[in-house]
Image (cartoon, rainbow, N blue to C red):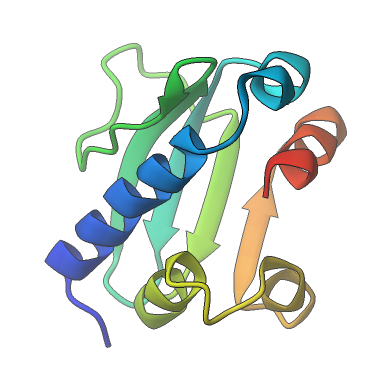
Length: 115
């Protein structure tokens, strides 16, 4: 099992990977949304945002507006680290039940274009 710090680093790297997405794709597919990433085996949730300028930063405290996240991810700590390191395919993780995404259909379609 990965630690909370390892998950924090993985989410930071995910943000760096998102920065590599070209501006045209971001402009076409990114809509500003709040995101929560619940690490199921550690019982910790990170909160962040996806926007035209990037992804994150992720913090362990919920947003002050009190609204639930628009996009909710649930994943195990080891799976998060493996996904970010390119060792786990997102499609296989979704269909294998290792990742759960709770979002609107439109948000799912947009995210698919960016992953």
